[in-house]
Image (cartoon, rainbow, N blue to C red; front, top):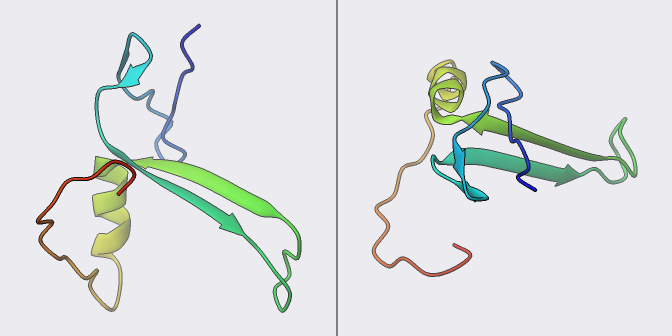
Length: 75
């Protein structure tokens, strides 16, 4: 059974084919700890590339962009 993955910002369903995500997305998973108002909660969200671009365009300090030299599993 294929799992649908949707962008949390725009709600668009990301393209899947035979259980494989056919477009890239940003997946954020944060385990909040002490000294936050979200102690012991885990938050997770997905952003499509367009929503990621929109979000970072509003940052006061630009995102660091580095070239990727090697492509390894899990990185």
